[in-house]
Image 1 (cartoon, helix red, strand yellow):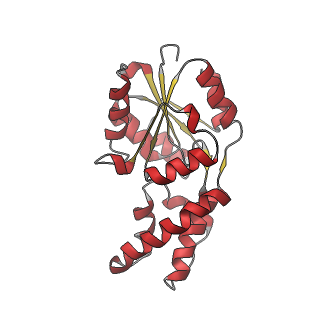
Image 2 (tube, rainbow, N blue to C red):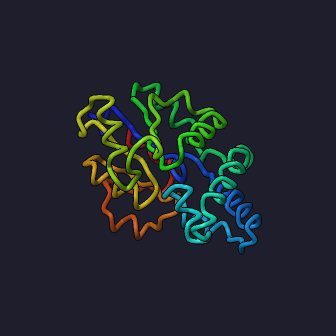
Length: 212
């Protein structure tokens, strides 16, 4: 990893544990629409594809727009109450920044909520660029987001590494032809991640420090 200049991070499941916040907002919508609430573990498996896709399996098409509005209004407060950084994530970002790496975010979250998280958890200052799914035509696992970030910094792809937690992160990294490290702290199983053959699999974000 000696030639790496740019490190791109996913947020949820990688640096940030916001599963309780997501489940809280999801079940708020279910109660408002008189639908059955779901366990955190069930909601967790749906995370990573954006909030619209989170709701789709449970909400009728005619009510989906209303449900999404309910979710987003609730979620901006739920994030402040229920989200936190994974252990040593803050010290890792400080260390990488001090060493001179350029840092960026590639998230399937809408930019509004990504920025709420970055500000609330005091990590926005570490990132040179933040790109979210509502700012591109295609979200992950499409490689557009990663390609756009690399192009912005004008690095060779051999100088870039992407850190995520899901199968879709491994797929996006492979399609963008970027080294990808997957942390097993997210919503994808180690077995499913392994099937995607990322550059490396680690059990916690704290272990990333050893690679740099």
